[in-house]
Image (cartoon, rainbow, N blue to C red; front, side):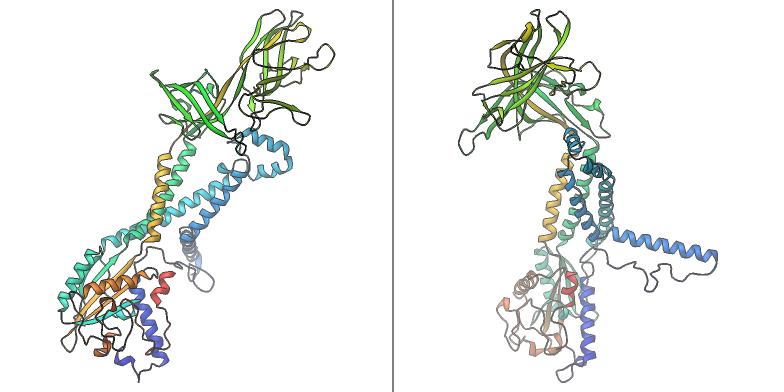
Length: 639
């Protein structure tokens, strides 16, 4: 503290306020450039009237000029708000909230049948959902608006900060502030080492610690070295936001250039990757079906095992499909596909989704000719694989010699059981007692109407159920290898055996690698921005009136951290090996240099009148009782 600021060891209120303002100014100047965040409050409307245009001059030209200034000012204000970090976080939060309805409400582009069923069961609520586009959340106007605003916000936030950060990397660390005692972490001592040697040793020490350094000279003739470290913190921050943009672009490209379809394949049957072969198919707006990967595969065998332990009864322990796939040249390759281990063929992925049973049935007509023979997939309904399905016989001749059609619907139960509540059902998913239970109909199947029809459902609108000889409805149970005669001499039905089937999902998506890279970069950038500390450090050496060298060290971080004083103490202790502390180097020897004796970390301070540790901020509250306990730089760093 200088003599001008002292008055019998006390300060008047104006002097204290001036010192506090000076400290805040010094620390603000020293902290300038520690962050590339935009200054809040810039381009705000002027006080009084909220106008950016200022005074409005008379006449048409004045009105046009005022309107132009006003429009430009509001546009700049809106752009600054949109590109602020606060708005970007709000938009990111809104995007997460907007994704919730897409997970809870059936989506048309994911499962149209489930969405139609929801509409049928909830007609009133469905009308509201339709108006709000909740059945197509991810392609809705409001979701797209949030997505695009977030995209623009991130770009507008990152571009100027990137250029500013590049400028900081190309620049030099700022020169030492006039009063280092006003920094949050500070220490000082005296030595007989020359100032140039002290600064030279400090520069070498800081470079070994990976600081960027720059030497300079003050107006009073003191030499100093300025150092800065922790640039990766801001680089990590920018990398995190750039990674978010990469992920947004990857997701957008993935939705535009993707194809996805499902196929149920019975054992010993095959699939070719062409559009007519799919059971269901959808693609992005910009995907061309001619770009489907040319390949195919055959299901050779399916392996499914289930636990028989009481606690985990029925829990699947193995799902594996053995397939043989071929490429465009016809080269065949055996492969295995499991639930979490898809097959990669070019840009396509073949994933295993489900499993079930397909009874092999043969139907003969009234003339003894085979009217139908083949495997019919039945769809599981519960964990015991109680499966429902239909058999449609369209090419059939009845007992009167006329063309007719037959339809059968019922259950296939791998482990058969029956009760009054559930009727026929399966108690275990493995085929311990496989039974086929069917009802029989004859009439018009409706397959010649030209309208699409679900192959797993039987439309009995124009059909009549067969009756047995006693007048009861005709219903029967068959074990593998058994046959039954149809009523009125309509032929026979034989349950030959049962095969297994597996359902596959074939997807082609663009941008997956970019999305993964963006996610990894986002994690790395976030870790760097949270764990690293951007800080500055100054070492000043000057000669006092006694011809001794006064060494001052101070440090300032972007955010408040206990590591800043600890690092300063360690560096001061290391520097004292080349600039030893004089025995009389305590605070009483030169009050004008600010408080602080030899650094305790070095172990050679004299402890005369000041017990502060090296690297701690100066405690001159006795001289300045009205100053706040916390420094302005620490307060500004948190903001």
